[in-house]
Length: 237
Image (tube, rainbow, N blue to C red; front, top):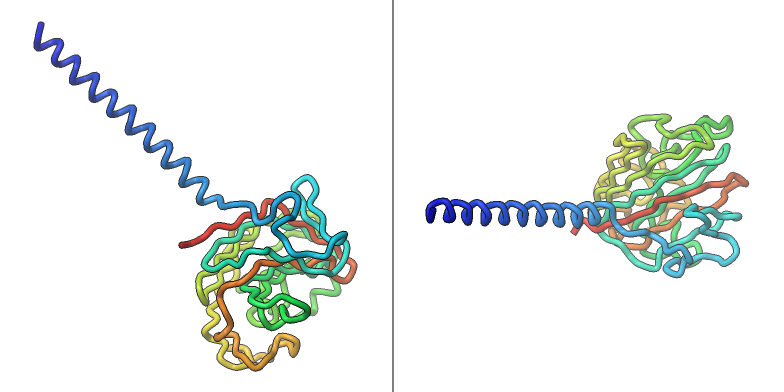
């Protein structure tokens, strides 16, 4: 009888430990999943954004603009993963900016890096240089795979991983651009020998630009609308 009671007590303790372990693993998994998802880039009221009032609006989870004006985070980010969805209008030409170290006035032109968003299927965009196409590091490096963006009116998934001088761009789950900023040692010429757009040029090589800064989006450019949703950011640290 004593042996039976002892065995039952041992089994009860093992069962309790097993249940405790399962609960612990579940809690850890939930926390890990939340951290992997990240936090919303912008609050619904845009109180953590810098933008021109009346241009940008955030309704029903969709961010859009009525003019070609930028919106920037108030927070600066370093070593992070940015994930979002975007939808282009016909002939849309927009972008996501990272490492915006100076964004006042026109300073963003030479003090941030733009991941290009474009409707590559539009007739006026087809002739553009490859480093102006969707997924390019605008004016600096073309995407390695073309026409991954969906046609106008459909939602796309974009993930940008920024770690120091490394920027990786995933479009619709495909790695389409793998950038190492240390290769931009010239102030006027890209590593592949092409010329940078003159408005991106200043006296500091891109390899020496800060790898910490604000995140921004370009608004309604050349009359074509752009829409963003499900924007999250998480630290890699």
